[in-house]
Length: 450
Image (cartoon, rainbow, N blue to C red):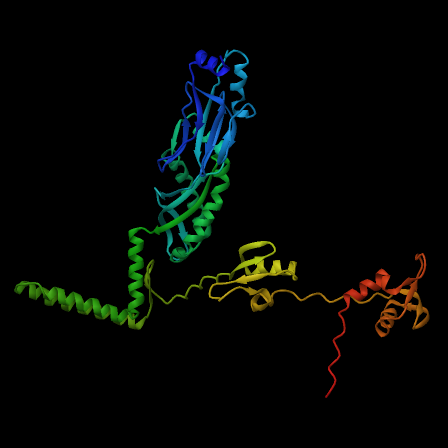
């Protein structure tokens, strides 16, 4: 009788030939594979599909994590080593372990919203309250940390068990980001994407360390104001469209007179006429006052003296899509200039919205104008040598040696100075070689006249 037959009779176990999990749901994050009263054999295979990870817990301690692939489980595998060790001791203790499958694909379209308004200070409207909502996506990037910190011994863990905690942290990050930005509320709509990226980058280090979770996308769908602030904005917009406060006052007076005169009956007509005359006098006085003291409408203080226009928002720094030796990225003008200055000889290419294609940095005026010029070659040091060659014999400076080399490049020019073992060809002397390399070659001679 073989060892596995003995194992069957002794433990009454069923053998697991294939360990795998096919997820037919959209919200399951962790599934504990049923191994009760079953045995992993020397021939068992573990299949982990794309978008999954398998975690072995041996005798209460996490032992290993398997990524996508097919694995043959034998005595060389640490996660089940205790099982095979038990055979040598006549099954005095059975294999005690759990197998968890973790879903590592993205969980998308998870909604978030602010349960309470976010209070912020606006330079134009004062203290205001904002509400916001949107969606976010996340995935498990550290299965071991997720099992230890979040799941524990839960055999079936779904998105509904962690979404609440994630949303509370995200809403707090939204409040911090918007509060620190200090952007006028009228300009918030143009910053939704930037806010979303900043919230994601702000919260990910905490999520990855605490939960083994990474936020892959965070989207702000809308930020809404209280109803009274929206009404004030509507009134301000209407005033801006009408422009002339006197014409607006005349229009409202005419509408009121027409409404009062439309009342049925004699009493209504008389009342309408009296009301009309009274409103006419009142509106006339208002118009005269407005004409004598022209003003502007302010949603916080009403009609008042002309106030200086607030300064426009600072211009946005230009952004460029960059491709070069350090990779691809979206960079500011200053960052592009720094990379070009660090290595002028490299192939730095940039692109911006509206361009037909990529351009070399030197073809973009705003970049080329910021890159400092190539530093000029330093002056030739006044070093003396003992010289012998077509220029005669004697002591020559480095500048004189260079001049002789240019006059007669093919001549036998040799040099000596203290420290040399003997005479050396001039072009083999370090100082001469360095000076020749730093000086650009002369321009070619012009073609002969015909």
